[in-house]
Amino acid sequence: MERKVSERIIAGLDLGSSSVKYLIAEEADGNASIIGVGIVPSKSINKGFVVDLNKASDAIVQAKKQAEAMSGKKASTVYVTVSGAHIFSVNNRGVIVISKDGREIGADDIKRVEESAKVLLLQPNQKIIHILPRQFIIDGQGGIRNPIGMSGIKLEEEVHIVTSSSTALYNIGKCISMAELELGSFVLQSLASSYSILGDQEKDLGIALLDIGAGTGDLILYVNGNIAHTTVLPIGGEYITKDIAFALRISLEEAEKVKKQYGFVITKKGDIPSGEVEIEKVSTNEKFSVPYTEIGEIVTSRVDEILEGIRLELMKSGFWSSIPAGIVITGGCALLKGFAERASEILEIPSRVGFPKSDFALSDILSSPEYSASVGLIRYAMENEKVVRKRSDLWKSLSWLKDIFE
Image 1: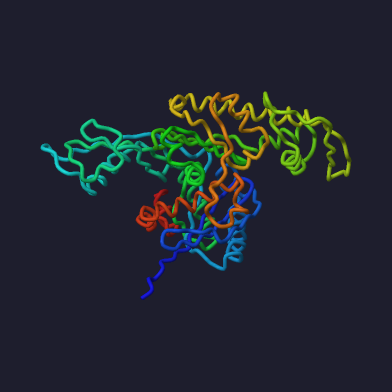
Image 2 (image 1 turned 30 degrees about the vertical axis):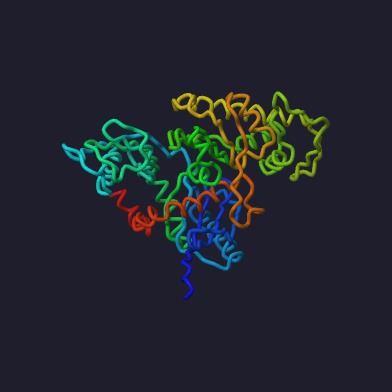
């Protein structure tokens, strides 16, 4: 008798400032393959905020249709990245008494200490989207990852809590509902990217990951295998594009082409291309030449400013000395030649470009750093299936969001 194969369709939606990406994966007995991809350019999301509901939902529908046409499959529930200045995070601790004489710790105790750990004075209009375990502590002994079955009198849990603007979540949820999809879970952008790039050994050693796209830079730090710090910074590739447009007096569209085709970051060891680049103003058909060095100087000036901001954030986090594995740069901006090398020079730690792991299908399409979060969403959905299913009832419609404002 043949064993029945359990199949499930998973979808991930990456809402960026320059595009909407929709991935469909098919999971069978714990193994998943990405079978559909949809990518639609869109300016309807800006730095994590919806700026046009109708255009955002239309872009989601278009990307969804592309992925469905490629895969021949449909997913009703989707996991969605969140980013932006409305994201806040904090490390917190919960404490409970097991018993005066000590007894074995059970699942109910884990629930109780988690409830204790999430007691937090939230900022107005904020909602918790992640409670990420860091470690358990039994009677003063830390570094415990799973305390079930162990004995103790006092149980503590350190967690990393991520919150988001309720308004931002509501508007994203509204777009998803308008696209006739159900929301499975919101996932922090940097967390999603880490699922597609970082390995357990790097996390144990201590490492930072920076996902820098068009509008935001999402930073996550792992120390001793656990999330120690996350933040979202108002930095991104669109600032480089604007600098090029201003300096060369060309349109943003033309500046974006210049950045992608000729942009590079000047490094101490890197060679600076000689010669000039011929640029055409589409609006007037006027052609003019710009030295490669000038383009490099424009790009490098902004990249240095971005990296100085990362340097300050690492110092402020208190974990800079705890990431000997260095920093991984991913996202669309990581494609800039010399970016990772310059990061190593300014931050004075090892740096490399992060590419999504290619053990899924369609690796030829999804191998670029700009798809790290999209691929990571699928991994997150797979590895957190049980947790996601328990919470899914909270996210199946927009009704829960209405309670926020009551």
